[in-house]
Length: 174
Image 1: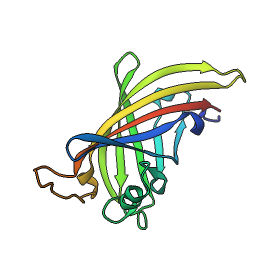
Image 2: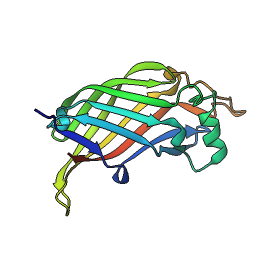
Image 3: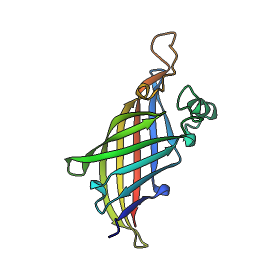
């Protein structure tokens, strides 16, 4: 018996991040190329396999993007992708779940937990069943070897250790 497959709709999905800059404001970026594979009839009971093309990072600043791709941060020449594989979702309350799994960045694999809000499902005008999820979480970039930083003259650092991750994902049932 064939397993139901949910395919990510890239035109209605985004994966973004925010990091505190100079301890005073947030810089936002996105990964423009990523994919999520999900097999299972029940989207919320299925495991997620997420692959992110790190070279697709975009912060609207070419020099900053190149620095993030360098060995100071993601080291794209040696680590082209980051990967998240879920090990299960636990219901917190109606429509809200805790998604647990393993995140790999720069070859460093660590447990990671994200909050997942189920937006529901609907049928589009062409008869396709679609479902939407919002995902958010926080990680410490130094846990994954993204250690570069510089001290500020007035105290503090240029880039915070904490990175907030957000995703708006739409799936199409196959």
